[in-house]
Length: 368
Image 1 (spheres, rainbow, N blue to C red):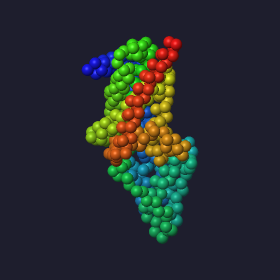
Image 2: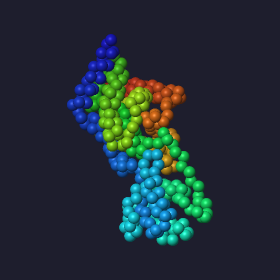
Image 3: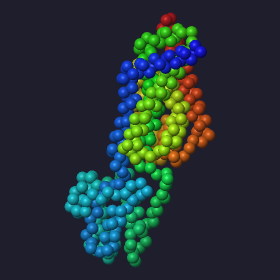
Image 4: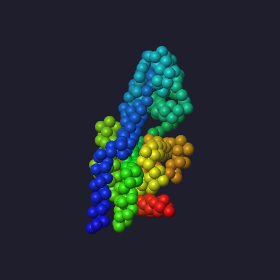
């Protein structure tokens, strides 16, 4: 009973402390929202149609049909292209300045030789490669009587495993809010104990000081879960996010051991970082790096070789690769993953214990 009362008392104190000192929450609240808004606005907030120009200089029915196909082509998510202009001079000017991916010119003699003039902005970018692939999909369906066989390029539809790019980013922002918030808030609470000289009382209490550490973990879990509801709501509003309640709930439940592990790691790191003013930028930069190069911004398989190699050994990359499919309803958590998550939670608790052991040793060393 005494242990539970002490545990709940520390948790209640933490919540009151976080309400009074908003600086402990600002980064945990703002970073996931910023990642969501900036990423979706730049990379998919308004769909995934590539901007091109289509200039039809032919009066033939075949040319008109091809032009219409370029306008109408779509995937199971969005149109393939956003045809910005049909004016040749404007299109050339826009592509030269990098405002268009491609200009497709259907020449006057198209119906006799079935050749197109294609002008690209930069053939060495991923967007340009994707544009060429999409263009090839349309050309494969064009009516070209008597012409040589075109390159066959089939698109394997991944429905229902397709989501908008912005929806993927929204899910990643929620996951970021959960694990990053748990780590940062737990570290801040631990370090504030030191800066406010309450470590002394905790170390002298007849109860194991780990009780206070676990209360910090609980407070971090509660507060970071509440903060994550903001990017979750924004995802439904602005990111074409359509995850149902059950999958959202299962994701939050599955993330609990991850959050325990991250909170324990935050407390353990706090022992070495000494000040929450030092911990905040380091943990924030680490979380943002994880978001961009470990599967939060894009699937690991689509990342550059260096990022893929990094993600192989970086454990935080599993958060995005395991939980984004769960959140969107593509896949579940198998027995092996569940065991790994529980082991991670145990490691987090052990890190809390270790952090307070090191604190006690440091205190005893200073006395000597």
